[in-house]
Image 1 (cartoon, rainbow, N blue to C red):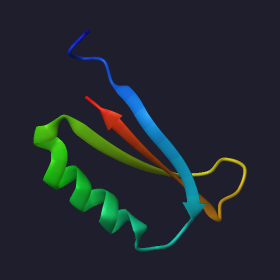
Image 2 (image 1 turned 60 degrees about the vertical axis):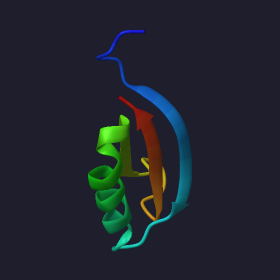
Image 3 (image 1 turned 60 degrees about the horizontal axis):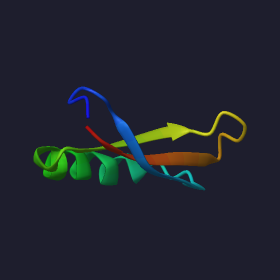
Length: 57
């Protein structure tokens, strides 16, 4: 397996909240040494929805 490849492990859509980024931030800071990365984006079709993704780096 290529060590520089990013693998998507899971994705979920949820209702957007202005504070949800705090969860993503703490997960990224806490689990980066476990080769995990977390992402958050607004759904392109519905801005009231957020897309939360877990990656293995």
